[in-house]
Structures are given as structure tokens and as C-alpha cells.
Image: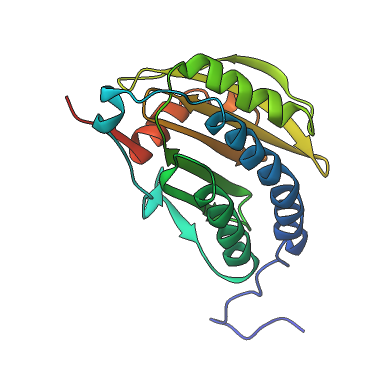
Length: 203
């Protein structure tokens, strides 16, 4: 029976499997991502004056995307932050999710302030650790904007879902941003903008 005049048509069924796919992929990929960052801290040897100029902040929104904090995302966030906080030299660490699961627009970000002597070496160590558990394709340098340091983007796949992985390292921080349902090439332009919402530097 058709709905009465003036009554809105029922919306199409939501893609309930989207959130499930994202959560499965997150659980697998972020463990690898955190593991990569862990490798960074164990090779830090000396302090750098430049590191004190770096600040890491957890944004309320990221690229205009609202933060996702409810349900299973909350449990994943707690696990990420607990792991990051345990690494030597880490400060102001955070892990967060942003976006809309129904629109297949999900971004995960993890970052921490830490003194790094050789940013490129630290970034290489992070991607190497990541690649031990997940194949990375098309890894390429990424724009570092005004923040400098080293940055790269690549693509991995989890549960049949493409995931863009971009990481950075500089004298005072290290972090990664992951876009679900995207490739590294898709996010090259957005990456430096999102990093700049997380990291700031004073002169």
C-alpha cells in the first residue's frame, strides 16, 4: 500500500554491513599501525630542541568530519590510546575516528609527540612494521606542507576494503591517518591538510 499523501516515503535500507566492514578492518589495521609507531620509540637516542616547538592536538572534527565515539568505536579508541601512552618518550598521544559509516567516509588518526633524531628513518621503521602484517601498495612520498619532516602514503586492503595509509615523522612527532574505502592516491591532496589540523609548530 502506498503511503498517504504528504507522508514521506520510507528511506532505503541502510548498508548495515558498512560499519561491520570498517570495524573488522580497523581492528586488524590499527594494531599494525600502532605496532609501527612502537618501533619508532625504541630507536630514539637524543633530545632535540626543535621537538619542543611541536604540539599534537586531538581535533574535535577532522576535515569537517565529526568524531565517532559511540559503540564499538569507543572500545577501539581506548585500546589505541592505552597502547600509545605506554611507549617510551610518547606525550599527548591520541587515537580517534571521524566521519560517517553509512556514507563510507571513515578516517582514523593516531599521533603522538616524541623526540625523533632521524624522521625518515623513523617513518621507514613505522611503514616496515606495518608491512609485516599487511601488504602495502603504491607507497610514495607525500606533501609535508609547512610542517616539514618526512611523509608517505600507500594503500592496503583489509576484508576486501581499500584503506589509504599516510604517515609522517618529524623532529617532534609521528603519526598516521587512515581513510577507509580510499586509496593512497585518492587522499594525497587531503593528507597535509588533515595533518595540519593535528600538528602545529611554533617558530
